[in-house]
Figure: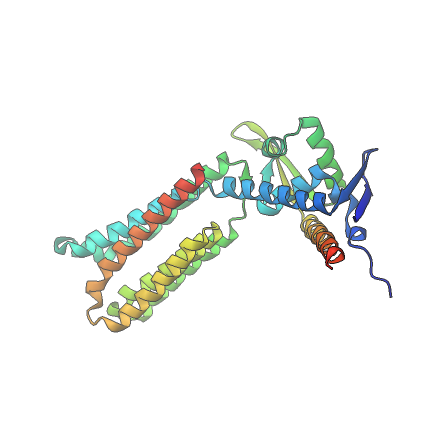
Length: 202
Length: 106
């Protein structure tokens, strides 16, 4: 059997290790890392609630004819309010958490979503914008889910982004499609939030 | 040409069980609170401080002390060098396991 003998750097004891101990140590480290990962993302669902509500609001304002004027300017108000609330919730969670992750990836994704949505609104006709915005949001939130280490949610959201684009090409009246897509994304986020909450309680 | 045994690749500073645990936590989270490390690794304050000092002296972790909401807090971060050392150490452990598997193969 391969036996490994090492000096402990600052102690007097000699440590020995064979391959089984090495395997045991690797398993132990994996367990420590998964505990830390779970702690790190335990509250990740909280800020998603803001956007599930924002998507639901987009669907409702587009579905009710009387609220159509609100729908036209909805994202002009919902985006900054949503971003502000997200930052506030994230800071509050960060202050309480004993482990932290760099926020750079989240900031880059948020900036990507905002800039590409603004560019799409400025450059594309309205009938295209109502679809493209869901493609951007789908991929953007897939990136967020990836950062939160919820891979199934990331795949689901990316698939929904692609499906939104395909539907936009097939369906003639894209304005009719918009509330359905908003509702679908809101429901998807609600499902993801529920899944993350259940996972964090385990 | 002789090939070195995987055990030769193990880093003495990282190899210690507690220090490996500290670096494993910091590989997952960019920053960990002193209290979290203490609870997760089931250590006393003094024991954790001693191991952190060894890692800090080796340039593997950076310790930041400060106040948050009027509470003193100590944050521990892994340096780039610390992450590299952990990854190399884990690779060496894996090589060690693989080598024994090869030796045992008929």
